[in-house]
Image (cartoon, rainbow, N blue to C red; front, top):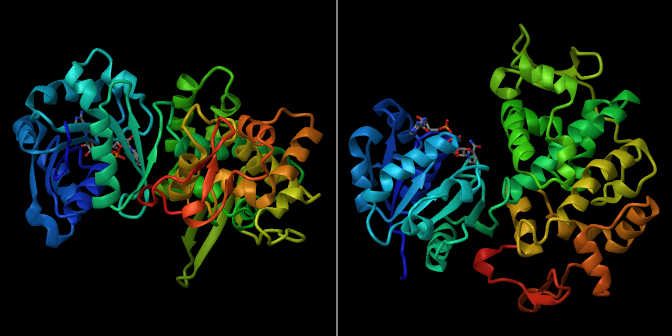
Amino acid sequence: MSRTIESVAVIGCGTMGSGIAAASAAARCRVLMLDVDAEAVERGLGAVDEEHRHLVETGTIADDLDKIAAYDWICEAIVEDLEVKRDLFERLEPLRKEGSVISSNTSGIPLRDISAGMSPRFRADVAITHFFNPVSVMKLFELVPGEDTDADVVAAFSDFGADKLDKGVVHAKDTVNFIGNRIGCFLMLSGLHKAKSYLAEGMTQETVDAVLGKPIGLPPTGLYGLIDLIGLDVMYLVGKNLDVNLPDDDAGRAFTDFPQVEQAMYDRGQLGRKTGGGFSKMTKLDDGVRHKETFELISGVWRDTVDPDLEGVPTDLGEVMFTDSAQGRLAWDIFGGTLRYAADLVPEIADDIVNIDNAIRWGFNWVKGPFEMLDAIGNDRVITKIESEGSELPRMLRVLREARATSFYKGEGAAAEYLGVDGVFRPMPAADETSR
Ligand SMILES: NC(=O)c1ccc[n+]([C@@H]2O[C@H](COP(=O)([O-])OP(=O)(O)OC[C@H]3O[C@@H](n4cnc5c(N)ncnc54)[C@H](O)[C@@H]3O)[C@@H](O)[C@H]2O)c1
C-alpha cells in the first residue's frame, strides 16, 4: 500500500506537539490538535502562525479522540511515560482510518516497548518520529522504524519530513536515545566527569567551555553552557534512560550518573537557564547592566565570570587535540573520546556513517559530524595517537585501516562516496536526504 500524508493529528500540544502542529500547518496541511484540556490546546495553538490557524481544528482527548479518523498521520507527543503512551495508543488504534500512519515523538523509549503486544496493524503502521527542540529551527528529524514497520510507512514519513517539513531525515535504529542524543549526550555526560581533573589543576570552567567550542567546531556554548540551556533535569533523565538501556559493555555506562557536585545542583533545583541559573547566571545590576556569574564547581561559590584562557590554542579546526597543553589534553580527552565513541557505534545505532554525521550536524550544530571531523584532522594521526596510548581502535577506524583507506569520504558532487561498514565505498545517498 502506498501512503501519503496530507493531514496530521497531533496529540499532546506542549513544546514538541505544538512545534510539529505549527510546522505541519505551515506546510499547508490540515491539522488536529488534541490535549488533556482546552487550556493546554490553547497554549499550543499559540505556536501556530495566524495565517495558518484556519487549517487547525482543536479538541480534547476525552471528547474528540474520534476526530483522528479524518487524518493521515497520528502523531503522539504527550509526556515521556511508557504506560501513559501505551494507554493512549490502545485507545486511539481502533479509531484511526485504514492506511493512516502513527508515530511517537519519544526522546528515548524504545519502540519495541511501545508496540509490545499491540495489534499487527499497529506494529506495521508505527514508527518513532523524533524531532528536535525547537521544531521550527532544528533541521534534524530522526526516523526510527520497528521490526514490523512497513516500508511504505517509513517512506511516507521520510517524504513528509523532507518535502513538506523541510527537515533533514536521518534513519536511525531502535536503540537507546537513537543517534543524536546517544552521541551528543555522551559528550556532555562524559565531559562533566572528565573535566573534573582539569578543574582540579586550575583550569576554569570558562576555559573548558571555550576549548570545547570553536576550536573543535562545536557551538560557543561548549559544555557547561549547553547543559545550562538544556537543563540538568533533562540530562538527569537522559542518564537514567541510558542506565537502563545501554548495552552492558558500552563506554557510556561509566557516565550515566552525575558527578557529586552536579547531583547536588540537581537536588537543590539549580538546573540551568530555566531556573535562573545552573553553571552560570545572568543578573541585572542597579544601573541596568547585565552581569554574568559562574558557579565554581571546585569551591561551590558564585563568582564573576572570567575570560577563558586560550593562550596557545590553535585556530585550525581540531588542531587543539594534538597540542601538548592542558587545553589540548582536555579537548582530546572529551571531544576525541566522543569521536572514538561514535566510531564504535556503526552499525549498532545506524547502518552507515552518513546518518551519524547528519544527525550530529543537524541536531547539535557541530560544524562537522564525527566522521567528517576525523577526515578533517587526519585519520592516520588519530590512529597513531590512540595506539600510542595503548587503547583499542574503535570499529570504523579498524574498518578504514583494513580497507587501506585514509578517509571516510572521498570524491565530490555526483561522484562522492562514503566508506561502508564492510570496508567498501558506496555512492552518497540521494541529495534530498542529505545536505552535506
Ligand atoms: N522537549 C524536548 O526537547 C523534546 C525533544 C524531543 C522529544 N521530546 C519528547 O516529546 C514528548 C513531549 O515532550 P514535550 O517536551 O513537548 O513535553 P511537554 O510537557 O511540553 O508537553 C506534553 C503535553 O502532553 C500533555 N499531557 C500530559 N499528560 C498527558 C496524558 N496523561 N495524556 C495525554 N496528554 C498528556 C500535556 O498537557 C502537555 O501539553 C515526550 O515524549 C518527550 O520526551 C521532547
